[in-house]
Amino acid sequence: MYISCPLCGLNSHLNRFKPEELQEIIELIEMRSQGRAKGWKVVDRFSALDDDELMEKIANRCRVILKIIGEEVMEKSAAAALVNRLREEIVDLEKSVEENENEVGAWRAESEELVTRINVAYNTNYKELDDAIDFLLEVALED
Image 1: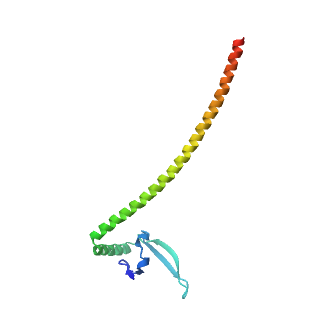
Image 2: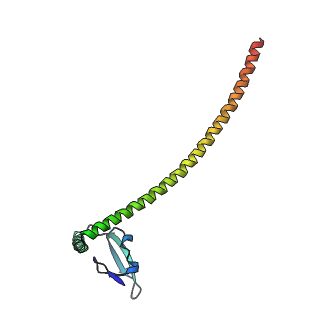
Image 3: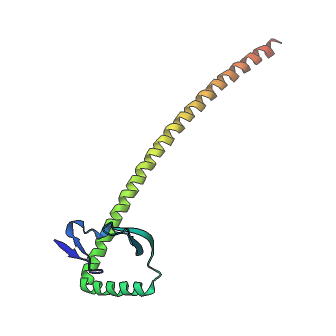
């Protein structure tokens, strides 16, 4: 089964009809023939947004399509799109939190190791200083 695009009239098989995967850009594409029965080649792509006449035609057609669809369907569709977008954002946030937790865990391990090394160095130096002070006191008291 096929579906006809209400904007351009292009027929597309329902299995391949995935408008949610399309980009939100409108491009004009310059094509050049590669010769008889050799197909076409894209020569250039540029934005169609500067073409006021074309944009007006597209806008008018979109207004007609929106009237056909009706506000109720649009509101449900908009709500579904918002829910899907929020779900995607939640997944992204969960990934970010997970990555940050891993980073924090690594920082905590490094910090604990550094504190341990500082304590060992301090205790070692303290012991040496304490021994030196004891020695100096003994020498001073002998005199």
